[in-house]
Length: 177
Image 1 (cartoon, helix red, strand yellow):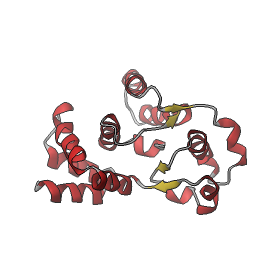
Image 2 (image 1 turned 60 degrees about the vertical axis):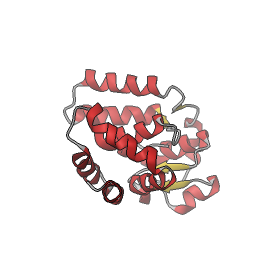
Image 3 (image 1 turned 90 degrees about the vertical axis):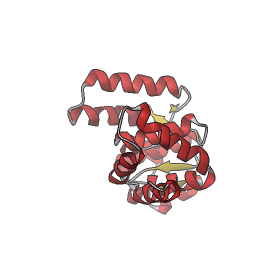
Image 4 (image 1 turned 135 degrees about the vertical axis):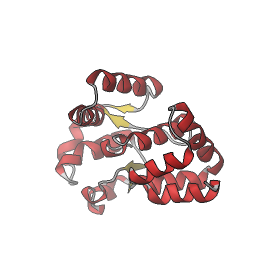
């Protein structure tokens, strides 16, 4: 289950979605998460039409990612009120984990009944790297060219700035960049 905050930084979002395209995990989100993410992008100056196209591309690429039917669960949850829709989405989807920077918004007592983890994206990506080092590194090597961006070291710098420094460092060590 991907929280709004991990979808916001473009390099992180791109990396997460590319790994999902490779079948390394199944991404999940809700309409509320996508709406908040899109609204944040527009508020920060991104073109609304471009944001709309990006959301449509994500929906087309992952047609089964959007989880519905979670709103009735929100009132019964005890995590941070601003993030109850996130937990409700994860519960409805029977997700194994919520990937978020906002770990403190999900105290153990709020998630324990649902047998799911709350994991920061750095830890999640390190786990993916340990489970499938070849596909993860291969996808990272392809990512800069696909986006007409600078080479892998620059992507790793961007991922570090986006909140995944340990992952960027581990990939750097494995690829000698």
